[in-house]
Length: 258
Length: 321
Image 1 (cartoon, each protein chain N blue to C red):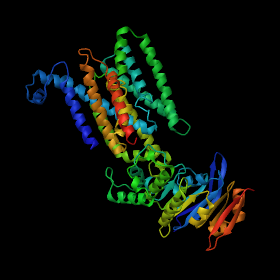
Image 2 (cartoon, chains in turn blue, brown; image 1 turned 180 degrees about the horizontal axis):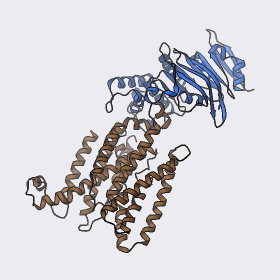
Image 3 (tube, each protein chain N blue to C red; image 1 turned 90 degrees about the vertical axis):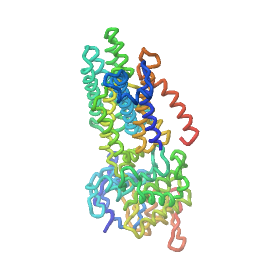
Image 4 (cartoon, helix red, strand yellow; image 1 turned 45 degrees about the vertical axis):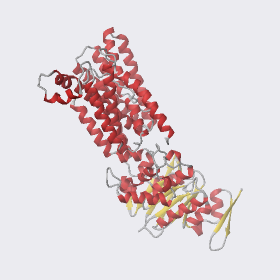
């Protein structure tokens, strides 16, 4: 069953039409990249899909159910969002922060049950944070904080992962490793992920589908090989972008000023 | 572990309070009091004078600390205290009006509680009117309403006769000498503790910001309204018993956090225990240090609280904050 489907979706921010008549079908096991210039509505779209912002028109269906009818913990078990600006928080330990991701799953009011602890420890391990488990969050570096936010999202274990610039602050090794961990969660399961990013090269390695926002509500959606073409990208970003095949079906992208 | 220590501290503070006063009692007297005859002086002192006052002090300390915890999350501001949104100002205007009119103690309580409720509703309605709710809006509304109450308080103080001004000032500084806790306040503190524990995981999530809490499944809108009303009513009931006892609600939550209780599952009961003990201890000193002269407890809370807090702050700064 289609995991997420939008019909005729319109999104207005400050009276500007960012998304117009968006028809998107996200199947389980797929990884979508969300590309576009600043202010084309990437974050607004993610927030609308997570039900933080109301859509101006159209509907969103999650596994056939209208998103408007879902809320609270049941919704949080199915859709999770990594925020662009990380976690704004009163300081807590790394472990406590990751444990917050289990909130929609908690059974017990007072004790963390064994399953929750295991899930959290796994998530911390996946993002190389286990050794920082007892550290206070206000002592973390930018990259560590970003990995913690990712670990919290992984502990939440939603069906649909919405990621707003997940590679922010991450060094190259962690970009690849961390995002591959997330992708492993998605492929072969009934999950999917949508990640907004500015890194076309990362996206071309990580994702199998692309939603390219062209501005003013125009968009292109489809498999990576179709959308990540020189003409589409150059139009969307307003600068010349060259695509060079590197063999093995992979491509590298170069930028030139227009 | 922390909670166990705080419970011991609470018991110690209550014993200290029951034993200190103008008539010296030993621990032996205290333990024998229930078995001494009905007419025994010890029993009367403890049961009629010290116990009610000690209980009232513990309740007020607990109520204010719990309210302080809630206000600090609600307003996402470490400087928030139970009085910041004008509840105490409303109660003070109510109480001072009653004193001004020479009403009985019963009417003073009613009037103070009425003033507090009026203030709660006023701030809530104004902060929610029309536009979208925001922390800044609520905070600004509360501060402005507080300023309004402040002006009315000054008006009442300047137009009253000298001996009424004396009792007004005592009320304003926070004073437990006339205090008797009613069953309402027991019930409220217990309900606050129970409700706080039930919501403690949601509160932990809320410290991550509204949007993140929303995506983790917290109904932020409903939780905010609940928190505002809960903190206000807790504050109102404390203020009605003892006036505006400062310092407790601001500092106790921070002290617990620095002692390692940043998780609300521990912060909430911890703050109630520490706040209660702290006020019981402060009140014992308030009525004994300059006996027979009694000091307003609000003066003592600040005088002991400031050095204690600086000590905790220094110690926690050397570890990770």
